[in-house]
Amino acid sequence: GIQVEQSPPDLILQEGANSTLRCNFSDSVNNLQWFHQNPWGQLINLFYIPSGTKQNGRLSATTVATERYSLLYISSSQTTDSGVYFCAGTVLGGTSYGKLTFGQGTILTVHP
Amino acid sequence: ETGVTQSPTHLIKTRGQQVTLRCSSQSGHNTVSWYQQALGQGPQFIFQYYREEENGRGNFPPRFSGLQFPNYSSELNVNALELDDSALYLCASSLALQNIQYFGAGTRLSVL
Image (tube, rainbow over the protein chains, first blue to last red):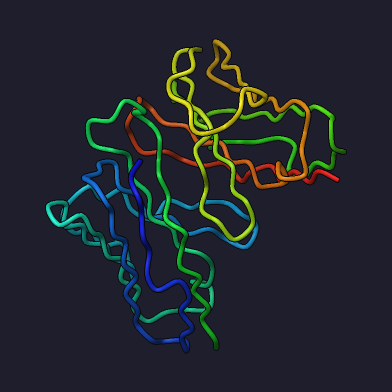
């Protein structure tokens, strides 16, 4: 199966700072998604971004499919941004069509 | 439009017992996937159901089984519980086999 590597594993910021989270895939993927897991465990969809760039408020994401990586940008971070960020994707052309493979996550802590 | 709902939210069982977790998919979605998330890890794919049939399975033993009903809701059954089965179990629904997956809040299972 594919390997998904996320970096950095941990990130500590002061409120107002900007950050970039990275996700590398060992093979071509589609259905690439970014999630934020809140303290209660729910995975919140941030972006569905198999390629290109999208923006939603203070968050934006870019996927370069040919180079098998994706970036999540958080600008002007707030304490409510704290939590774990996951990227995940399904294998292009694989037989387990809906199998999302997740990275290990980036734990973000934003201090006031 | 209702989102993905899971029940129960928390569950405590003893080793050797059996458990059933339930998931109601988002309105209009016909595909349900189940994931297991151990503490500090990313979610791991268990299996997926599409039109009441299992469509892809991860690296989980046969004591993990499931069902999908005509209304697309789903159950995850785990027999002969082991201590390592303690985890957050997440259900996700999607409109088709490869589209965006939306997650419920999860069921936190503790096996003592």
